[in-house]
Amino acid sequence: MKSTWLVVALTCAALAPACLPRSQTNDLSPWMGSGAASFPVQAPSLPADAFVTLKNPADAHAELCAADSQHPHFPDDADVITRTFCADVKPGGVMPTPHGLADLLDQLGVGFKDPHGGNGTGGNPAFAILGHSSALTARKVTSIAPTAFVFTPPPADGSSPIGPDFVAVAYDPGEQFVEVAAFDPGGGDMNFYLVLFDQACTYAQGGCTTADLLTTRLVSGWSNVRVYEDSSALGNTIFDCHVCHEPDNSVNHILRMQEIEAPFTHWFSAKTKGGSALLQDFHAAHGTNEDYGPIPAALVDQSDPALLAEVLKQGGYGNQPNAFPSAAIEMEIDTACVGQPAVNVPMGKSPTWTTTYDNAVSGQFIAAPYHDVKITDPEKLADASGAYRQWLAGEWRGELLDTRDVFLDVGLRDMGFAPREGLDGRAMLSQMCEQCHQSKLDMS
Image 1 (tube, rainbow, N blue to C red):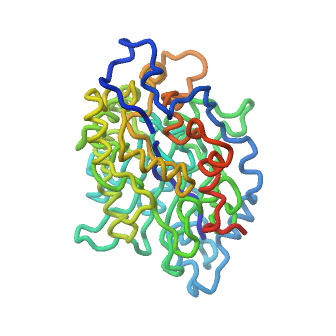
Image 2: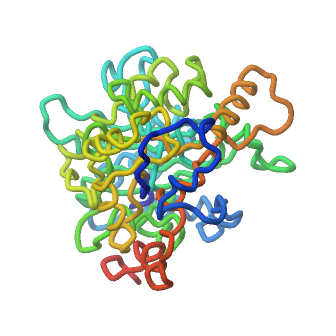
């Protein structure tokens, strides 16, 4: 009973004597450095047949709900996602059929009880919002299409939050799935799942539009909800979680948060300079009255990565592979470019970050998070934000723009979306392939 889950990413740059707005320079080449993209880096799209190898819903449910020797009281001694979705194996039990994201969160015990309350208080779950990722959907995560994490709050007494009811849900706009991590008390390990769903547009002529997938429409009207576990159904597919969550298959699965120390560079937070800049970009597109995925509109500004960091540390996941030292990197970036984080063109430079990036280039680790707080091109961001505001106001005509395509092109190598400039073939294979294809993983 395992699967796929998300968390964090970033990468390299060059020193600029001053950080000028784009309007003051037409030639960015002197500032690009060795990490610059000398050719267009195409945005990948999810293959249309990406899920073709997954079992049909009935077989997936049967696999999920098959008891084993670790769970003599199955499903009552399993994790929360199995306990709830497999309720029908008990006499008189019925399998739940969530019709939207709010239903799923309520089912898993992390629903929002008070949309005007607090983060992790008053019956609400804890949550944090991430503007740049190295996870499954990394190439689609930005400050205006961030990943929202909803999870069991850390206990106030500092004890471990990892218990039979622990669950964490990751939501990204644009895809008809959410990712779930849940602790299995019978197996004593963290399990990972992919929860897929359909909507009316799934079966419509022409399929789902960008407005169906990138707006509030995505969180309701679900049907055909099915759950796939990583230990079986998702293994050996592009959704296999082991490269991130079991990088050494001789130990248990881990939760990932590369930016686990303050100031949590790419996480939304009103308590940090960078987090506030990301919130400002988010609100420029979404305003202040729109719910975002699972997060009620009134709570968005309470996003708190420190709560997620507490969960990981108190739960025994504090030692992160190739951790991103946010404080040192942000200090070096700020020294080199006084306009950061509000102005991210030209790119910043951090020797500390370069070390983290070098570790990823060597193939030892997944991509390192980007050095600057913002990963976005200011012109693309303004265009996408304007289009989204028009859609909210009912003024947009035609298909909504893909608001996720706002990356800074000259930073794509440093974000890990293309290999470092100048690598030979062997080094390129190490950087781009070795995180998945190496002996510490289960190559069977």
